[in-house]
Amino acid sequence: MTLALAVRGLHKAYDAPVLRGLDLDVEPGSLVTLLGPSGCGKTTLLRLVAGFDRSDGGTVEVAGRLVEGPGAHVPAERRRVGIVPQEGALFPHLCVHDNVAFGLPRAERSGPRADEVLELVGLSGYGRRMPHELSGGQQQRVAVARALAPRPSLVLLDEPFSALDAGLRATVRADVRSSLKAAGATAVLVTHDQQEALSVADVVAVVRDGRVVQAAAPEEVYLRPADLGVATFVGEAVVLAGTASGRSVDTPLGRLDLVAPADGPVDVVLRPEQLLVGDAGQTQAVVLERVFYGHDALLRLRLPGGDVATARISAGPLPAEGSTVRVGCRGPVVAFPAS
Image 1 (cartoon, rainbow, N blue to C red):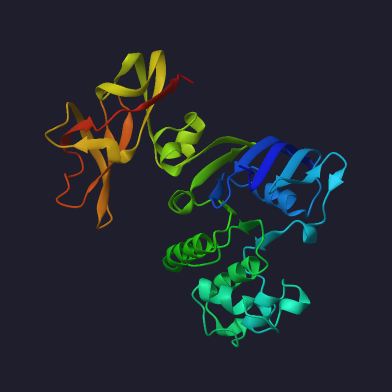
Image 2 (image 1 turned 60 degrees about the horizontal axis):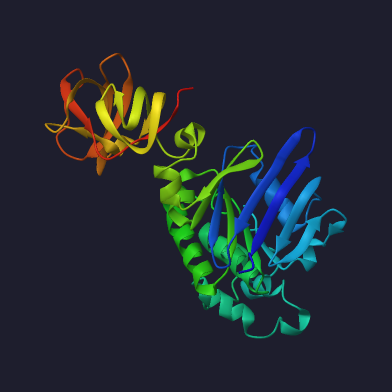
């Protein structure tokens, strides 16, 4: 099967190196999120794939066609790559229909395609409205429709929800994901929002220092991170020192099961929701702080030996700060060689 996007050994430097031999595979029809801290190279990668910049080394293939590489640089307008920028970037003097039709060949702009993709993104009947008459979320859906209109091989989305308020962001990203899936589109979305990356993606590609350090299904990245850096970057993590022997590890929480066998000193990683607080626990801990969120709560706990861990528990009566509780662990944990 031909990949929708194949990036091999991509390098790019400005004043300093940004991409350092980055590799990435994107399968047709999938939604891949690029997740990483600011400055790790996410947006630079999108610009190189789109054709806005030239690489310093490596190759980019879109739908099996070499568009970037030694002696090759296909112009952006000939790559069949759709772009959804952060702010939508709609033309303020054009109505919604004409914004969507703008990327089509002139002969097709008066045809049915613009209305088809507007219906796809849930904006049927909005064609004659002007951009200033739309909400921020509606403007972003128009931007997605405009990117989908020419039937591109690949759609690139550069933090398209960052300008929306938190309440609207979840709704719009769910709508955009549904629209992309309905269109059978292949998409790469750049974000630094971990919840966003995990909730919308088929594959999460974690970028660090100009390379992809792990690319896998969201649950794989969260539950079986490739290294300690990924574990502490993606979601909340409790890190404890331990001594491993085969499939078990001795920790301040007692002896725990391991996802994969290890031996010797290790850093043990577990998620706050794995911590059990109550009669099932085998270790005593002191409650340092409690934070109530309604649907659940967080407890900061001091474990034997002085380690501090955060437990996420269901809503209900909470133990008092300063009280002693019993703590255990649910399920196997991940361990890495001690740092």
